Amino acid sequence: MTANPSAGADPAAQALRARINTSQPHTARIWNYWLGGKDNYEVDRAAGDQIRQLHPDIGEYARADRLFLGRAVRHLVADKGIRQFLDIGTGLPSADNTHEVAQRIAPETRIVYVDNDPLVLTHARALLTSTPEGRTDYLDEDLRNVDAILEHAAKTLDFTQPVALMLLGVVIFIGDDEDPYGLVRRLVDRLPSGSHLVLSHTITSPAMPDVDEAVKFWNEHGTPKLTQRTPEDVTRFFDGLELLEPGVVSCSRWRPEVTGEVEPEEVAMFGGVGLKR
Image (tube, rainbow, N blue to C red; front, side, top):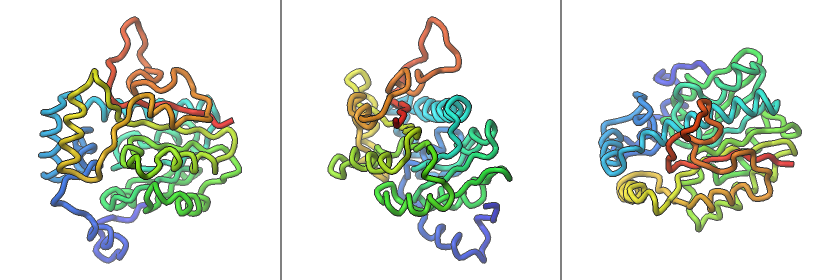
């Protein structure tokens, strides 16, 4: 896990670098840019700035989604006793990745990251490391390939014990013609009782028309393409599960750590956590 991703003698690293397309903006790199990271290219920064002009608050969505990840993982580890995570659509490593949050509380926690973006995988080889007590692994795989993901993840995770399935900002890349609900259901069905689904998704809402403009721009210029859904559509991903309070809400409002009379500002990234009984 600690191999240098730029080592020229590493055939796997060379193969990953060969797949990186620097001529077209990519969502994982733009997300990294909005979060203040350095793992992006000029084409990503230019697109990110144009999207931010169309929708000035877009950076807040990225931050709200990241903070939602942290709160959800801490709750599942500390309060629900979860010790295994399957994080699909990892994105570029940054501060407080799933394994870092989980292993701070329970060092023995095991995490499998899944992504098919070569830049993500290149960095994963160096950055997604584990505590000695736990284990962290990563897979070069697409969310659509459920059987392959579960087969390889089973080398690290024990699927007879509860698993937290993390799908943050990734189902937006599954078009309506690809049966996104069936895809998520297939993953959840393979998990034992006591497992949880953590999912976030960009929404479309009449109250936020600038979001639609930003997504339209992205789909014309970037990759992969996005599919927006309403809050009700996002809630459907949790059908058959027991939604934890407060349900599917703006990520900024899912159990915020600072509470008071004024709710955190709503963002167009909604998320929730569901329990499989």
